[in-house]
Amino acid sequence: MIAISRMLVLNCRFSATGMFAFLAMLMLVPAQAAQAACKDGPVVLQVLGSGGPFGAGRASAGYLVWIDGVGRIMVDAGGGTFARFHEAGAQVGDLELLALSHFHPDHSSEVPALLWVQPTDMTVSGPTGNEGYPSTNEYVTGLFGPEGVFRAVTDGKGLQTVTVDVTRSEATEVFTNGPIRVRGLGVPHGNVPAIGYRIDIGDVSIAFSSDQNGSDPAFAEFASGVDVLVVHVAVPESAGGFGAALHAKPSVWGQMATDAGVGTLVLSHLSRIAPRNADGDLPGFGEKLAHLRSTYEGPMIIAEDLMCVPVEAK
Ligand SMILES: [Zn+2]
Image (tube, rainbow, N blue to C red; front, side, top):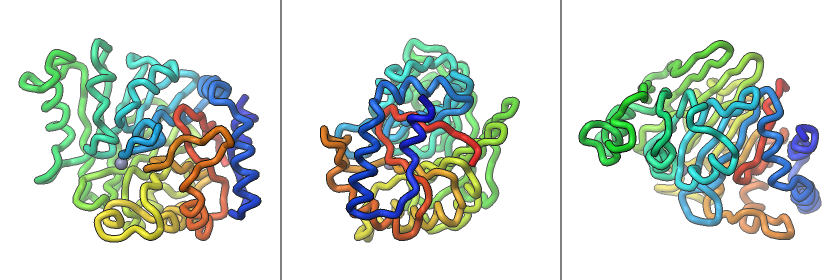
């Protein structure tokens, strides 16, 4: 099954013919077959939500890291990921770390739903706050503390918070357990405190860009050499103003992946892009892909909800 999933990893320059072949290959992997692969490998990344923030048939951002068949780390919990989490067959009680990138709803609004009538003994990591956004402690307390909106859920018990100072130039270690090491680093996302993550598990590694505009080369250095890099392709190459302050353009993502020397690039957070249609097409995404391919030639996967990506040393 892993071998089939690996067919998703392509290494071809973009062209109309290549695009057709790419989409045709994707059709070879039924969603259920891909899901089954998630529990098979030693380390597998599952996409819970490949969209956000606009409703286009995809859940908003969320990812699950399966280690030896157990979903132990979740990165982001955007709207819709509650349903995907359970469709994936994961258990909240297995989660050791919930790593939140920032406090926009398409990354963090599903947390109360996930934790409702569930065990809550886990670490929650996230950024420091500013005048417009809460810190991680304020977020958790505001939801589950004694005066919190959802105080009936957990009363804050069982949640340990770890905060990453987004102004710090060095990465912050947020979680370790045996061969697992998770670090966070502040990334530029307009005026929104946001962090990217790097997860090392034994000799394999995954990095998550979070939403960012790609203007700080420190992230490529942080993600250097990872086997899988997940990036959020939210805006087109023509983006300007507010959109460009928040989000990297496709060519910037490609350059970041090239600079970091990643094994496989996963394109996610496909704003306004509906899931593949019956013909395997992704209307509206071809131009973004072409710009990304202008700066990155390596293996690449376009995310769909519940897709599994085996994480193997490159
Ligand atoms: Zn977002």
